[in-house]
Length: 86
Image (cartoon, rainbow, N blue to C red; front, side, top):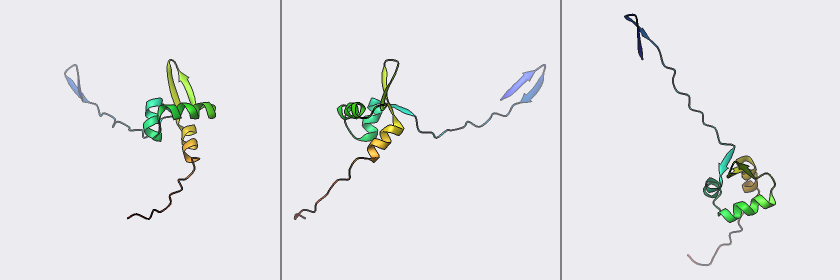
């Protein structure tokens, strides 16, 4: 950028833009559905079972991502049995 002041050109260097790669603390219900791979009903069921998971931000309901991650991490592993088909 060049700034002209009384016929003097002053060149200002712009700072490079910082990109903060941070996870959000809260996500919308719709984002939680995509993130967790479950339906809206399941999100609300988790909310009833785990206090603090769903909070209100004005009119919007938001999901506390760290709590949601703990819930997802605690889900049981699937018991996959081999089938006789190939």
